[in-house]
Length: 308
Image (cartoon, rainbow, N blue to C red; front, side):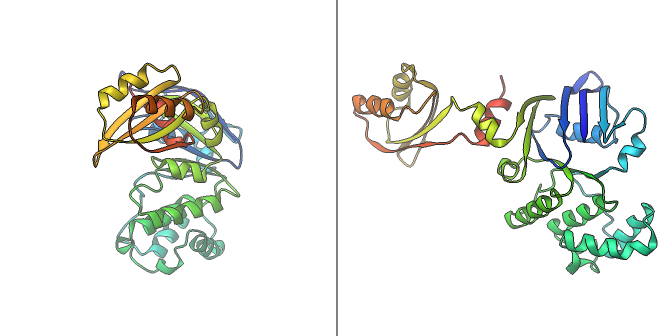
């Protein structure tokens, strides 16, 4: 279990992380979301002991970081955004080198390397130079590195950054499989990835924690916000805005024009399609399409991280 209390980090006079508190139970896959500069990487680096907090506490599996961070590192496998692997080595040689550094018993090394090769899907490249691998395979080798000591906690910083959709799906499958036995904390900009993979989502903005819960709970917290998408024959945007802004049922409006069509996204407190249709009919606008959609994690993310 991980317990973070009142975590703060300053770089000079800039507060990168401000007073974060969160408990992460054993066996949970947790996604850390936020725009660039939100403090995600700084938080992960403090958790893994690469930088010290300005204040606050970190306790991992009952061990206080301020007392013994070396011991905490034995419980955590960490893969930063840029995999720290030596590209001039063969994959097998590199992983064996890491096993030697981690003082894994020589009699157990071969079994461990085979386990990691199968788990991370790198058996076919074990005797290839790291420099010849695709980014997807390099990420898998990085995962094998982070898992070498069989840690109970795995921390991944943007593990799918720069990967193509097929590679992302492969890494997602690996994370889910690993998550059956370990606690996983990973940051990502891919909201659909977090929604599909994580048991729980944290959203950070400007160094602060602004949301915490499952994707469904976060969307449920915003259940008072319904999205209705409308397509009209090209109509004056100012006229549309004036009409909808007068309506008390509409709390938000976005208008765009494309291919001689006017596209409108309305936010309402409840399902208001009947009332919206009546407004459109009254104005004699030509309605081509109207559909309601569920609030997505992307909508929630935008609402919580938009500039004030």
